[in-house]
Amino acid sequence: WGETEDYTVVIVEPVIDAVNELNSINWEVSMQGNNQFLVSIPEIKAESTLRVINHLGQTLLTTFDIPYQTDYTQVLNLRNFPNGVYSVVVTHGNHVSSKSIMVVR
Image (cartoon, rainbow, N blue to C red; front, top):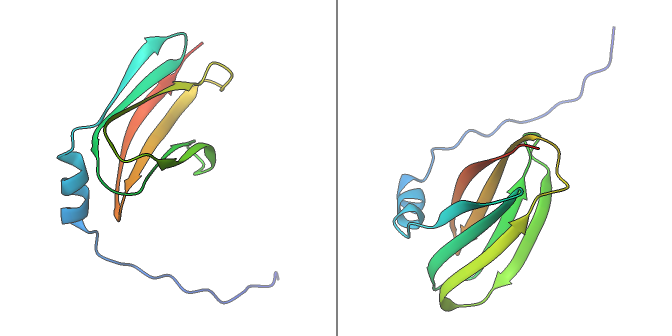
């Protein structure tokens, strides 16, 4: 028989208001062709980060300290990424929102 280790699982209720507040910002990810994606975030009013995460939960790209400004755009160059579905995650203050994108060669 194998050895086991004790662990604790903590289940919490989702914070719906936090997700709705960031979704109300209406940020977008649009395909620019050749597996490049344009992220547009209006009204940056809090510390924000942008991450690209694969289906295993690994962070592949991160942009820290997005400047406070009216509009923020960034082109994500995913040309060298393998085919698959990725999540673009924006953290804005204490709020988190994500959108899915697909890389196809």
